[in-house]
Amino acid sequence: ADDLVKAVDRIMRHADGARRLRVRANADTPEDAARARRFGAQGIGLCRTEHMFLGERRQLVEDLVLATTDEERQAALDALEPLQKADFIGIFRAMDGAPVTIRLIDPPLHEFLPDLVELSVKAATQEATEKDRRLLSAVKRLHEQNPMLGLRGVRLGLVIPGLFAMQVRAIAQAAKEVPGARPEIMIPLVATVQELESVREEAVKILAETGVDALIGTMIEVPRAALTAGQIAESAEFFSFGTNDLTQMTWGFSRDDVESSFFHRYLDLGIFGVSPFESIDRDGVGRLIEIAVAEGRAARPDLHLGICGEHGGDPDSVHFCHDVGLDYVSCSPFRIPVARLEAGRAALSESDSDTR
Ligand code: PEP
Ligand code: MG
Image (cartoon, rainbow, N blue to C red; front, side):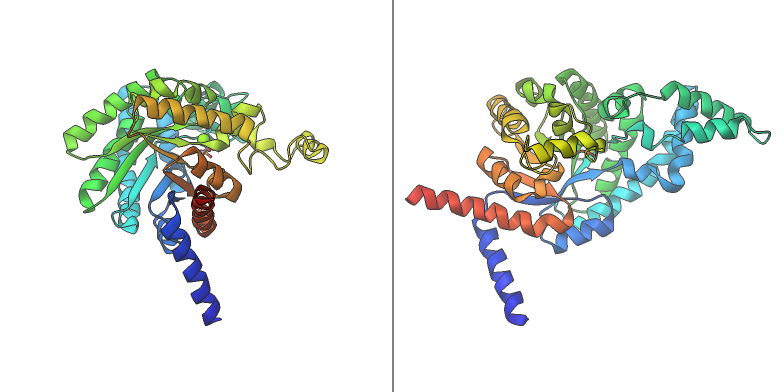
């Protein structure tokens, strides 16, 4: 068994020595971050902050949703800020000076708001409080037919004043407390440079006030963002391809319904060899990535480029990311060894064909 461990170590070192792609992890907790480092992650490529608003903090999210005045809204945000700061301190410590890309909140609202049916039933009972009734009308107001195409990501940040600012301040304050912390701030679901610019302006101001350095960049996960990457790169120091949403929006398939009958029928008919949610479809999402890489780099030669959709841990997709010239892939901690190996293989097969 010892020999096997040594052999695996040797192979991993060989792959690490050859690869050009860096490998980061998708992790949202200090525990995941620590696990990711054990697997060899060179940073966090995606820290999803929406998960930090669940559990006991739901109450504060409800307060935020219910706020009808600036004061009420600010009170809810003020209560959330120290909790967020503590979240980020934990992650910065676990990553010990490696870069951490923190994505500002991107909640599909249906996963965060109280369930409309449950709330309706409750609000109709004798015990219903005034708050229950107010919550019901707020939730009705926010109800969407297509939440995944609705009030998410940057859209939410622009609709709720102070929400993104609270997160940026928490990131900056946390970074100040952890020596060597390297935060990167990522804006989700951007479709146009104007959205990005309005968030960036506010974030730059907060960083300057706190004296903290952080890259500011964007997810590229809406086809329009990929097609206007040249403009978007003017306001972004990095791009991270969100291929989960990009696949959904490019194909027009709901990512939540891949178990549906038509999807299986398509697989049976061989309309796609493997699911496009598993492996990057070269002709669709792959083309959009190529366009965005070319336009982005033309506009900003030092643009950092990565991927943080599930595809970042799929060997075939990792190979594609190498070929298209990304700087890093980011995947779940358990897929890191595979990503390291495949990144090494991609680099080695390239040098093989160079010398042939
Ligand atoms: C993506 O869309 O690929 C992504 C990484 O973000 P999320 O899965 O959180 O939407
Ligand atoms: Mg996404």
